[in-house]
Image 1 (cartoon, rainbow, N blue to C red):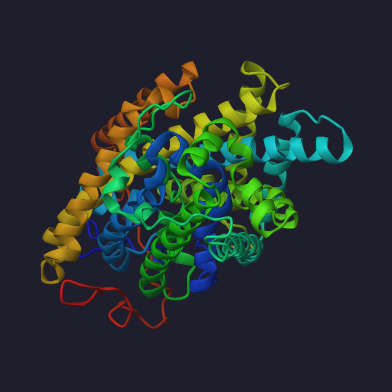
Image 2 (image 1 turned 180 degrees about the vertical axis):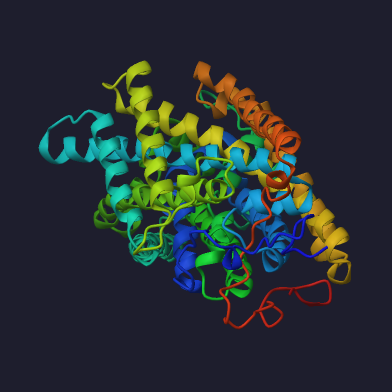
Length: 532
């Protein structure tokens, strides 16, 4: 089957179709794609918010091992994901991969699921941003600013930046990302250089078997469940998988996208594992670390930073939480806008979403739509949850519940993509089908991520913060998927030509551009030769 032609012979390469608004080609290189995606994982936000939960409610001493195991599993997932990215270049990400590998019905369903997931991540991050900014303003000026005002201000700021050239987004996110990483590295080095002199570094924390162990209830401390630790460890990576959505705007997508996936997973894995290990090593015993994580999680990092490195580092962290939350929300905004754009140009959403700005070549209409969605969600939470308690309403409900809703969908999409990779290579590229890269690795990734979803559902009461809305989240996610499948079936019956193009539009470069195959791309050596 020719990937650029449907059943009726129509060209599916958007670069050669008339009337298609294209994103700005060759706008960003490898570093730009890394900034656009790594920031979505928000390293400092992930560490300061998730590590106390993994230590205090999950694995205890084995918390670093949970991040280590997650690194291995997501690296295995990236093997097949990168192979698929070298064959299918499109802004649709999961949507395009699943459509090519399994079929348009499930592809459209997961396209809608991805739109929902990335759309709710932005307002989720505004909840965390508003909570911490409210604390900072109150601390500095003694003023209590309603959290919806701060959340909506973040949406407005992101809307302005995302409207312009994608290179501006990459630069803004790059500055935030570098600052976060430098801060965490300083924290890690500061703790480990105090080993035996205020820091207790235990090598047993890296034992992989501890990732699957909790700890018993002791005194007033509640027990730790391994499932909770693993889920929050995986949650910390959400965002790295966005790299394929920037394929059409990267200079050499068949090389840059796969390489950025590997770098993202491994770099974040090393940073997360070391930072978690350093954070718990700052306490004299693991029992004291668990106690602090359960009863004073907000100061879990700040106390160690002040004691072993200096109060200045704790102060810097308190500001980087704000810039990190903003940058993370912006990264998810950009990805959500590209999903709106991809579905719009295929007429599954209003066609106006598929238009780009005449000067900046950004998906400006789709970006505006994403800003409206975020603002509406914030306003609805303010109406129904209230606007006077940033801790419960902005942080607990808006941040926590929207992140949970989206994370389940992303994990489900990654699991389904793993199956799509196997089918796609068996059917379309049998000559490139490899026992490890396109069979065993995706199969293992499917099993692992399905298990993480099970852990989430099984611990829903805790993961959802005890809020009643949490029990509805799996059903909302399922309803979106069912709606997408039914919508695709309706299109199949009413407009077969349109159905044949669902998720199939790809980008093979503008006429006259040199063709790249990705064969020269550096990769990780798996299964006997370099992954290509």
